[in-house]
Each structure stands twice: as structure tokens, then as C-alpha cells.
Image 1 (cartoon, one colour):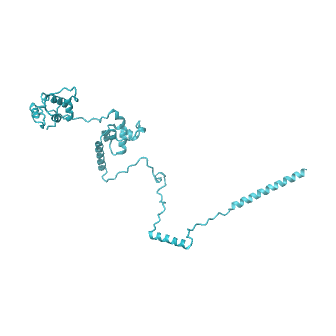
Image 2: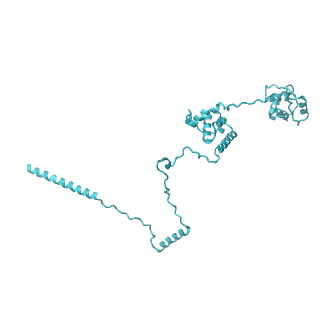
Image 3: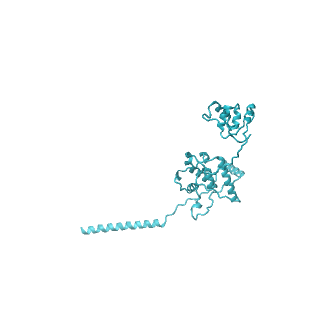
Length: 286
């Protein structure tokens, strides 16, 4: 069967349903439609108001081909050979079209791509989402007018691109990174929001020693022997040996305390002498 289809598939199907005895399967296969769609055309539910187009007059199908199909229900109709060869039109590459209802989601998708796949080039992000380089630069530098309200969202979930296209671009970027770094040494990704250690933030601190106490390594046999010895001490009435504790030493009174006491006595004597003098002066006056 030829890959060519009629120029107006539904109009051709309408004409074949009304003017021939071909089966629905034959018409559907010739016009590239579904069998139920051709049945709907016959019932009047589909293609209402469409005027049928004669494929014989337009040179797309021959009368003999139609007769062969009517005689044999399993026969596959073939389009007539083209008398005029139409040149193949090359479609120019245009920016990816994004529906108006989803254009406000593009900055969120760009932010998600920049965080999850930083190896992607700006041109790849443009092909996936359909944005511009200035917008990508503003989102990367956090100078976008709506930067505080941006939330990273998967462009596939938003319907801005297909998962196959995203996987293809990621694979291309991975191959490019592998070619640029043949040794396989890649910088470790820096996770946002992670706290640095004190040795990196405090200047001059340097590496610190490990203060974790060493774990006590003791065999099972030695542990059992120690437990058995303690049980024997308890059964014999002897007090278990306790760890030596340092004696509590109280600090001796310093010389400062003595000096303070002597100063206090001197002040008391001075007060007493002053009181006696005042009493003597009062008696003389009287």
C-alpha cells in the first residue's frame, strides 16, 4: 500500500461512502481514518456539512481500483501515481510555541532545569521550554522581577515539553561533559542550605583533634571473668573494690582574710577612742 493519502481525507471518505460499495475498513485504510469514524460518517454523526470530493476527478484514484475493491472486500486500495511531482518543502526552525495559559509557568520550569540539570546549555533550555537567554540569565542571577515567588517545577509535569525530549537533551549534555572531562573528575555539587563546618567558617581555627573517647575493647572471656570475680566477692561478704576517688581538699584561709580581720579591729578601736574623747569633752563643759 502506498504511504500517500488523499489531500482531503474526510471529504474523500464522504464521497466514497455515498457513491461506492466499499467497506468501512477499505475507506478507513485509504483515507487514514479510524473505522468507527467512517461508520460515523455513514450514520451522519461525523463530518456533517462536509461536501464530498471525487478522488477520480482529482486524479487520486482510478475507477478500476474502486471496482476491484468492490469486488473483493479484502482488497487494499492504492492511490494513483502522481502525474506532477510536488517539491518537498523544508520547514524552517521556529521558536517553540507555548500556549498562553502556560507561559507564566516557564520561569518555574527554567529554575527547575537550572537546579536539577546545571550541565544543560542555555540553547538546550530554550529548545525545551521556549524561553529566551536574557530570561535564563536573570533567573540564574536572581535578578528576575518575580524571583522571590518562583518555585522550581518539572517542565514535563507542566506540559511544556516531553519526557523524551528532556532525556535526549540531558544525555547530550552528559556526553559533552564527559568529553570535556576525560579523567572523569567532576566538581562535587554544592547543595544549597548546607551549613559549613567550624574549621571552614572560623579563621585560624584549623583542623581540630578528635575528642571522642576511645571505645573500651574487651573480650568476652575477660568480661565473664570480671563478672565472676565480683560475684565471688559479694558471696564472701567482702565489699567490692571501688574506684579511687580524689580526696576533697578545702582551700585554706588566705592572708587576705587575716588582713581584713585586723583592719576591722583597727576600725573598731578607732571608733571606741573617738567615743571616749567626746564624753570627756562634754564633762569638762559641764
